[in-house]
Length: 382
Image (cartoon, rainbow, N blue to C red; front, top):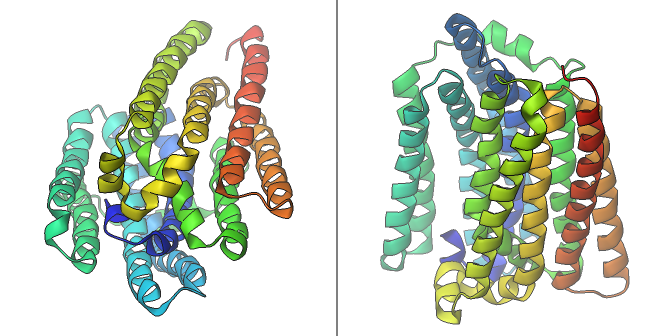
């Protein structure tokens, strides 16, 4: 939505800030959401306490998170022209303010699913979706500043629903305790998330001096088009993981195989639809960013099918608390991405080579997880 209201340079600044948002949200899901998903069989009182502690913990770190997100956006704006810098910084500020709100909303979604209240999660997401669809349809009637403000208001509205519905009582002491890292599954997966999203951020910083903010926006724009697929992958942790945790571990192999086939097929069909998108429709969705995003869309399409496969297969080590498998897999994928990106930039490669670097990383991740999960299934189930 914002891509269609911003220039390619402005959207590049927004994209850098938004990458940090996705990093923090990813860490939130693994550090706070994963325990809620895996505790689905616990008592309601235990789940309530864990939810209150998680929300309080996120409140403790909200201001530093806002500062970090905006700081990255400000760095990305260095060198931009005055007009792009002003609107780009405003977009980065909106993303910064929205980040802790989205994190708390995500935790509330996990809590809703774990306590068998999926309707609440659907209602909150519905508020967000309807708001964005309406705003998207009317965006040409408003200036970019109003669109940015309305986008932020939609985030707030979706969170307010959860706060009214669940009314979590503050638990500041428990929240502080929950922030203390330990050695466990959530910490290891959090590191994998930092590596996964962090590598995109590092790539952005590498691209800025060589290819400019517009190239960063092209990568983000192509990823934005796969928003429904990202939502589908997120559901694997929100809903599928908690459901599988209640089942016999001996059934994991066949179940994950079926889930993988369905999710990858949906991703492939969505990719075909995007590749057939007319020029006018693409420009309506992404504005100036469409040209750059369309040039890498075939590469990004293959990448997302592989990312879906990796996300599905990763359910097996998650269910068996094999954090080391997930961490090592992400380390190798990160090395592959950065290695390819650095070589491409040295050789003068453009944005297509950056997209190819992400595809190489997705390939390494998918193949590695398939191999490791095959070994996990041969062992005695937990």
